[in-house]
Length: 117
Length: 164
Image (cartoon, rainbow over all chains, first blue to last red; front, side, top):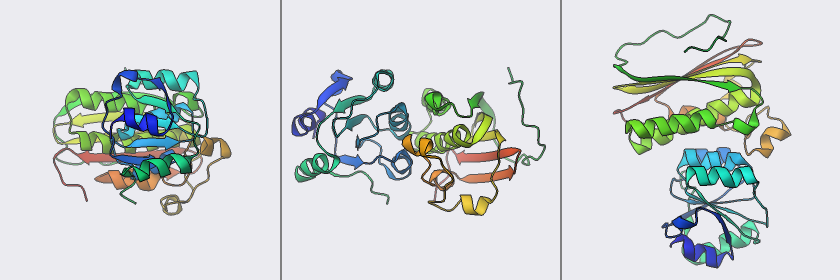
């Protein structure tokens, strides 16, 4: 599924890297614990999180994650958005809960990106 | 240029054989408590390895181990130095910090054991996965610590070896 479809499903707004909306996404990680993303996350997955600080973007850069959705209506800081532009990571924002965002994507056939658990 | 501040304690690691020819060396200073820049050195290390043309899976393992080690310095130490050595056969990362040290390394290595503060947990860290995750991504992992002085980590990831 490409990012553009995910954005529609989650009613998400794109905050950075609009040029990467054709990125193919097959797996999703829903996690607020960056250590677990580093320990178990697949590179190439989409990250759904309620954490909005710059460590999220650095964690994505380290783990090879190219797209993040901030859920529960949380707005990332200016620094977070700027860092995502620097690293080429697409940042989106949705008012859905983590549960509903995951449920919608799971129903569309996307799989878990925490496969090493 | 080498940083002026060096750890005061003198215990070290033996230089092993077959370390290969040095391709790249760089040192990074990490400031304890500097959460705004935490992870910056590891992101730079990742970029360096990418520019050198290191295999993507190996870059990922190095970057994760380095990032967790860097977060530990930011969270628990006063200051630290990270050294990156890329040779023809391996990537070596040494992290030396000046700080509180680890009282019980065996306990600290247990997944889930943590002495993190709420501030650290708000950053998404401090879940007790750091050291176990560094070890998981390393081919050689060595940790030495002196209470009240600091901690030294040695991480080696082979460029062509198999990882368990």
